[in-house]
Length: 206
Image 1: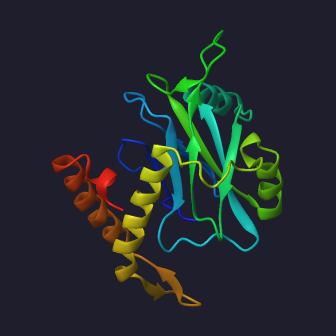
Image 2 (image 1 turned 180 degrees about the vertical axis):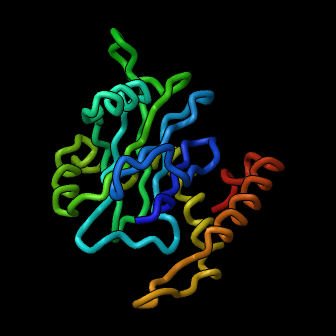
């Protein structure tokens, strides 16, 4: 699978599409910004990317320190499973917190070097682990409003999808649907320019 298969957007930060390292053809590591504070991250499949049959992308969280130490010693990093994305759920919003040593509360990451791990695994295994997460418990009543970060993330993803849909084409054996990476870059430049000129436009757009 191509290394440029996933997009990651920590809230308030530019999109990340290139992994910091690729430990194997089915695993990717993305270093999150350490100079900004954020509490959520959007992870999605880039346009045209199709996962192998019966697989899903498992999403993990670790620290750069743990990942580096594990890499040098040949061990597996101490990853925390966050959830997954795949066919039928090509994007999701994950809460990112950094628990300081000795602290009993989670706080948004700031000044820490966190790493997102994406691993292509059997879909059944990923689905089973998602069901074990606390977040998989029954949702609150429908009248409860979605967190602001979730609403903003949904608007960003919808904007990208609407823009890139017109660039969709087919290529290769089986005529797989693809979207040029250049088109995605064009959307991001346009979107970032609008965000700079009017940071509040997302709050007004329906």
